[in-house]
Image 1 (tube, rainbow, N blue to C red):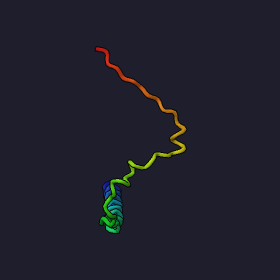
Image 2: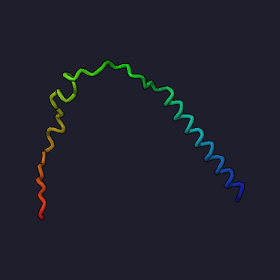
Image 3: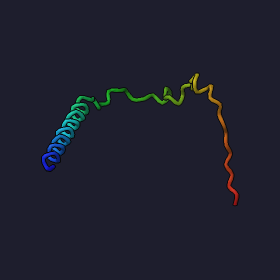
Image 4: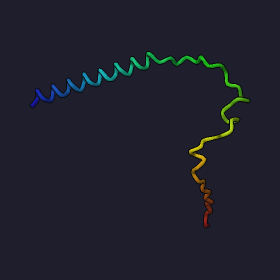
Length: 69
């Protein structure tokens, strides 16, 4: 019984170490440096007209909330 528990523990430890190595290799390969130029406020996403054909077909519902005191 103890041998089975030890084998399971060792297997889990190896598996966890393997996952950590994969995560580290992925994060090390990512480039977090900012290579984008500064954003022009006149061309910000808020200034673009919204157009989404699927979302525009969904009816909008306005609900007014009132408190009764």
